[in-house]
Image (cartoon, rainbow, N blue to C red):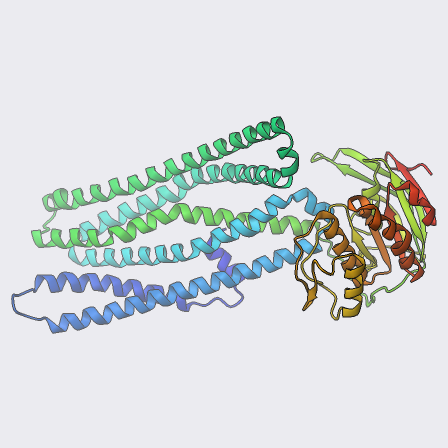
Length: 540
């Protein structure tokens, strides 16, 4: 899909004024050429040709105003359309399941929502400018028609030949190289992400760091080679346009007078016109690779959206069915729940299940087990981040359906081991300032950060402090159920004691339900139940 199709698809009320302004600017620029040539042929010493000066100024003003208006309008419209597309796709991302987002990969989503949309925005102005240049070339070709019909025919055949060659021959090779380059760029981004996220591990293992860096260097070299090949093709295209131009001049200068009645004055006018349109023509030819890139970027963005659409369930929502937010519950039952992590071919890598569990409101339950036993996957199934392959979740006697899943998920406040700390208390309209102060003091964060206008003044904290701040946020959300995935793992003994002996008990005493993943067997006595897992199943 190209920019014009993108504009038609996304713009509900297409505005033809920019296109009209481009045409007006092109006509004015073409007529400027005619005025320049005519005025030059009438130059006389000591004589001011006031009539042609007025024509020149009038056409120049039309050209400048029309082109400026068209470019500014294009910039504003494309920016608005890109914003619209970004918002729409981002909304679909947040409506997708966690599993779908994990399978698509953060690097790809980042690339297509930032790099590709940026490519579209940057290309729009240059392509509009190129379109104006193309229009001006057409106007100048009409001017050549009035001078020599044969020269006009030569011009049209030459321009059509170049255009067809670029669109149907050069574009195909560009598309192939751009596909390969895009995949390599994703690999480069992924490896750079590994360096940043795995910085500690690489810093402490020189052999691992060197090996990873060599692989990164190889990916960069492959990417550079692909981009160099693309650059070489671009150079060939540019030089071809130069060869074409000078061949056109040679035909007009040496062949045209020999086969037609073209005079010296006619040849000079045609050559002058050709020199005048050389820059616009080069602009047009040089923008073709950019046009191809922008078309590819648009295809990438729409492909991302199409995949998201395929994952999003389209049945009636809770609001469609008149269902209201759930504020409390009595029991949650996991019945014959099964879930498998799968590879790209769909083969099961690790399975959790069958799981049968009944949770009563106000309970404090610990989930224990070794690494890789399925505890975190179970937590994601329990809170609705993952949907089971089979089995059901029963809330107060009613099995969850697609429409009720979001309402069920809203019962939970979760801190996973790979939690993300937001810098703002999103979703909390009127946070209790006195409770915030109390919680920050309990977590010994009152001298580290504060909340002003629902924003944390500082989130640049240690891992343990960030976890405590995430706990503050979770408590302020005031949900019926809390899930904590090894929250105490990064805390000292003082905060471990406070967490297990005081905080969890206070939460359950206030009617909250807490499910905590924990290895701290010295605190198991505070739980109502301790459930142990191994190889994705309950063993006690």
